[in-house]
Structure formats: structure tokens, C-alpha cells
Amino acid sequence: MPADKLGRYMTSQAFIDRAKAAVADAVRALEAKGIKPAYGERASTREMAQEVMAEARVHERNKLLCKRLGELSREPAGAHLVDDATAAIARVLLLAKTAMPSEETKFLNEIREQLAQVRAQPALIEWAQLLIETDRTGRDVFRDRSIIDDTLFEQRIEAIRRELRQ
Image (cartoon, rainbow, N blue to C red):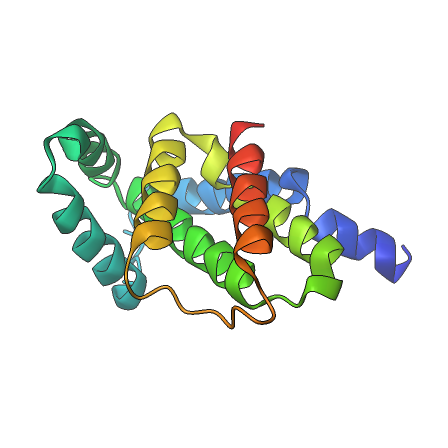
């Protein structure tokens, strides 16, 4: 298989779905033999997600979403989904602030790839929208406005929102 075709396949949703199915099969096989799988903690992402969730819970309008995310996070697989979604949103927001204007095609392809996993659950889409709005209106938004001006930044935020709706 040519490298470009393999690369496209490895970044596709089909590959991700097959990899997740293979891991689930392996876990079932281990459990059938009486072996309990161990799950590694991704502390930094989990801590970041919990911090933002704690801030979000303060506002009445976010309590239902935080409850749904908490329910999703009760199982290790669900917790990993929330962690991965949080990290994916952080990556696309960083890209929106730092990707050079000449890299717009690369930016759009990257957000498409990163947000594929977020679109898996309605609660994750709402979570992503909350994180985007929090980041967009926060005081610690860093970017070189001489390179990424307000218009380009808002276009990128809208591209991220469009990708979430697909």
C-alpha cells in the first residue's frame, strides 16, 4: 500500500473504529481468562478537564452538561472519551491561535481529524462548544494579532464550530 494511502487510512474514522474494536476484543479476551485489564491514568488531561468542569458547574446553565459528562466519565472508556475530547479541543484552539495564515488548508484538515472523536457524543459536542466559548472570551487568549488578526481568528473559530455540527 502506498504511504500516502496508508497515512490517509490511519487518520480515518474507519481505522479508529477498527482499533477501538480490536482493543475491546482484547479486553474481553483478557477478562475471559480472569485477567483484569489495568488502565493508565492520563492525569494532566484529566486534571485539566476536571478543573474546567468545576468552573463550568458554577454557572447554572452548565450544570446539566456537567452532570452528563460526569455520568459518561464513570466508566474508564467514557472518561477517556471526555479526556480525549478535551485534549482535541485544546489542540484545535491552539492551532487557531498559532497556525500561519498560509497553512489554512492544513489547519482545516487538522481540525477535521481532531474533532472526529468529539462528534461521537452529543455531550462532547456541547462540552467542546463550552470550551471554545470559554477560551474565546477568556482573558488569557494569546496570539500574535499581527499574524492572526481578529478576523482570521473568528473565521477559524467558526470553522471549528462548523466541523462540530457535521
